[in-house]
View 1 (spheres, rainbow, N blue to C red):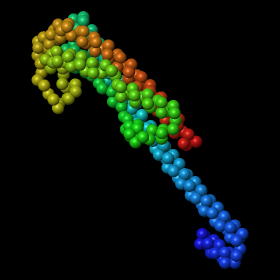
View 2: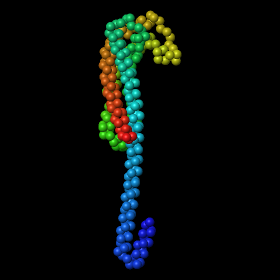
View 3: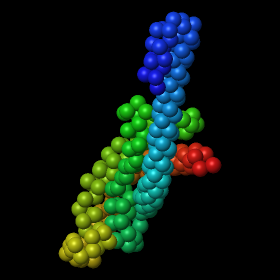
View 4: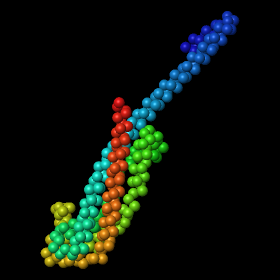
Length: 258
């Protein structure tokens, strides 16, 4: 097309038609400008479509992450509640010197209650990848940005007393290690894969009395139980934040289908 106009301009120059030559020259410039503008518009449209696709994929990936997070947090919530319940039963048994306690139950209170701890686990693959690549702006919903920042700052800060729970649990299990060996029924967890020798009734009774006599442990067990209750509040907050994030993601995804 440009060659065509060039030939016309050259012909006009030969014929001395300067005015017409200028008109054609201006027309050619205008066509070039229009072509450039159209090309830029197409490029912008392609970039916007690419960005929209990427933003949509980010939402889908975040949705998957938070469906997983809710599942993980609920599982851990059940574990911590079970741990806390058995810790309270251990406190009650020692405090009341309940010599009639079932030896299997007491072993369970020690191992699953006083001697246990659980760490919170959440999934942050998508958010970490976006943050590392400087692409958090792909999350265009401002409320969602704030919710995500709040959630991940909460998880990264963590439950501040988590380490103390582990310390107290370690103290408890170390001070009751032999009794746990006598009282704990390995079949509860490992079935036939770990078969310990059966303990005599007299040995189990002796182990029960030994645990009941460890009054000095009550302080550590009580402190651990208080921290367990705090951990339950922390987990409840995380679960609430997770539901808020997932709800906002799903509301945003609906806009893509409307």
